[in-house]
Image (cartoon, rainbow, N blue to C red; front, side):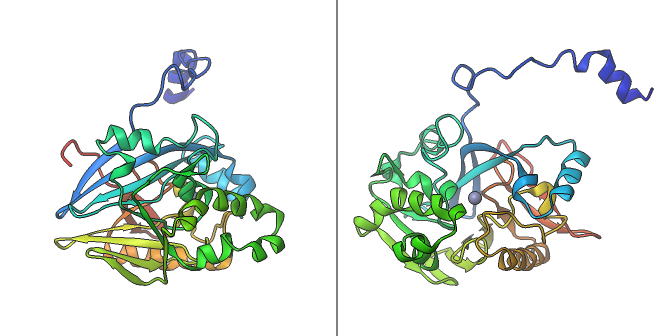
Length: 313
Ligand SMILES: [Zn+2]
C-alpha cells in the first residue's frame, strides 16, 4: 500500500463531515478582493458560485471527465461568478452584474451584499458594462422587475440586445435559448424602458482608460474590456473560459451556451494566443474567485497562472 493510501485509510476519509451545513446557518465569508491598477481601484465582487454538470453541456464529455479526474476536481464542477468594479475616481464602473434572482436564493445573486461589504452602495454605480447578455452576467440588473442600480447607464455591444431583446427572433429561437430571451426582457428590459441602455460596436473606446474589444461567438456581441491606468492593464474577458480545468489545455472544447460554438472556439484560440504573448493581467467571469491571473503557453496548449493573493491591494 502506498503512503497516500495509508494516509487516507488512517482516517482522512473518516474525518470528513457527513454533509455541509446549510448556507443560511454558516454562510461563506464576504466575497470581495481589492487590487490597485495604476490610479484605479479595482474590486472583484463575487456573485456566488454555481454547480454545473460540465460533461453533459460541453462538446467533449470524456475529455472533460478525464481532465477533472486528473486534477482531483469534483463533478458537477463549481463555477465562480465574478463581477469587477473599477473606481476611477470620476466613475464607478461595474463590469457584469451576476445572476440576481434568476438562479434562486443562496446560490448566486450575492453581488449587492458583497458590494456593500466592500463599502459601496448600488446607488454609487454610475456605469455598467456588460461583457454580454446572459442570465449570469445581466441577470443582476433588476430584481422583481425593478432596476437594482438606479443611477447607472448600461453599455453593451449592440449585437446582443439585437438578438436577446428582439421579439421576432425570439419567436423563431430554439427551445434551449428561450429562457435567455425571457430573462433578458425581465432584467435588461427595465433599463431599456428608462432610456438607460446604450450600445456600441466593438472595438470601441468608451471612457478614459476603458475600451471594449470584440470577443464574438459565445454571444454575437460578447466584448472584453481593457482597463488601463498609468501603463498598467487589465483585460476582463467575460466567458472566454468556462472551465479552466479543460479549455486552457484544449481551447476547441465548447459549451452549449455558445450561440456560435465555432466562432467561440476561434475567438478563444485567438485571445489565448494574444494574452499569452502580451502577458496582460486577465480577469475571468467563471475562473475561480477572484479570477485574476495570466495565460501561459506550454507544450500542449495553455495553462492558467493565478495572480498570488495579496494582503496589500
Ligand atoms: Zn457566463
